Length: 171
Image (cartoon, rainbow, N blue to C red; front, side, top):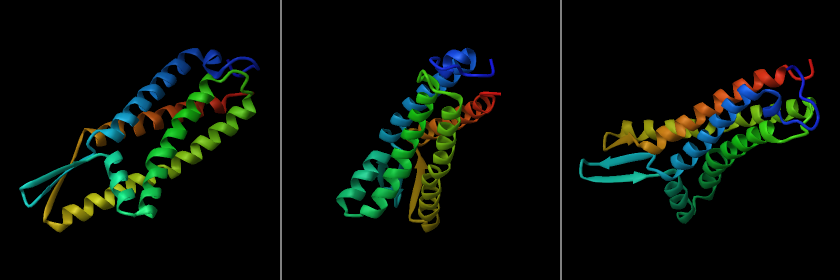
């Protein structure tokens, strides 16, 4: 089916692809929340002191330390953008009466949002590089990191697949 008629959700028009993509997005949302609250890194200082930090705990520490700028950057790019992107894609697939042109505009919004949400990966890479190069501490990634990574990858795959479907609308 090449068009999405009014009154019908995208998942109804593209049943097989839609079910797979929605399941990927729901799994991505679950991994996203688990990734935020589970230990993201484990930092060992001088082979004696170990500290496990989750994204959530890191945000709390930044807030309490008065590091509002860093808190806002990480909160917006690590929490808000991915959450909005996943939910916008779920809306794109599940909302009935979304005409082809609206679906294309919404996908364009989601696509642009995804580009900005990768800033947190850059920040984490700089943090890991800084800690590892100091030689005083050892940093290891935890389950939260891997779950967050799975969330990003599932969202990216769902986004690419959705882009293929949306590009065929109203042809």
